[in-house]
Amino acid sequence: MRQLENAGSQFQRLVTIMDTLRSPGGCPWDGEQTHESLLRYLVEEAYEVVEAIEAPAGIDRALLKEELGDVLLQVVFHSRVAEETPAEQGGFDIVQVLTALNDKLERRHPHVFGDEEAATGDDVLTRWDELKKKEKPERTGPLDGIPPHLPALALAEKTLSKASKAGLLDPEEMGAGTSFTTEEELGEHLLTLVAAAKSRGLDAERALRTATRNLIAQHS
Image (cartoon, rainbow, N blue to C red):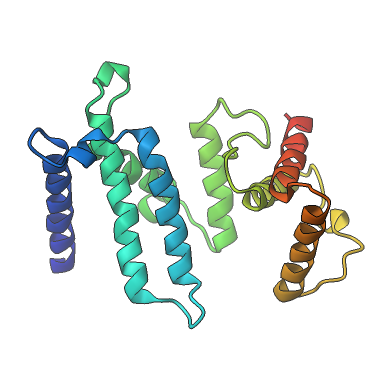
C-alpha cells in the first residue's frame, strides 16, 4: 500500500510540474506545443521503449525505466494540452483520462472485478473482444477499428489476425509455399524482399500498406 501511495504522490507531482510548464511564466517551448507538434515525440518515445526491451544484451532495465517515464510524460502533456480546450468542444483533463482507463479495465475484466469466470488467457481475450464490440457498436465490420497509421508490417499483422478470427482468410493457406521456419529465416526473407524492392525503385513500406488497405477494403 505504501508503494501505491508513493506512486500517487509522484504522479500528482508530475501533473503539477506539467501544469507549471504550460502556465503563464512557465516554459516557452512547452507552452507552444500542440497535439500535432507533440505527435512525433510520442511515436519516438514508444520506439525507444522497444529499443530498451530489445537491447542486444537483453532488456536494458535502466533505459526502460527512463523511456517509460518519457512515454508517461507524453500522456500527461497531451492531457494538459487537451485541458485548454473547452469541455463543450471535446476538452478533457488527466483525471478524465485516468477515470476512463480505470473504468474500462474493470469493465473488460469481469472475471476479476465481477462474477464471471475465465480459465485461460484465450478466454480472457475472447471476452475482451465481445465487450469491446458492445462498447463500440459503430464498428460493424470485422476489420473495423484497426489503426490505419500503424507501420506497414504491424498493420498487416493486425489485419491478418482480425481477418483470421473472423474466418475471412487462412494465414497458413496464404503463406503456403514459403520455406522459412524461424524468425531469423523470416527476417532474412523480409530483408531480401526489401532489397529486391529497392533495386527496382519500389517502396516496400508503401507496397505492403497498400496491399493491406486493399484487403481491408475488400471486407468493409
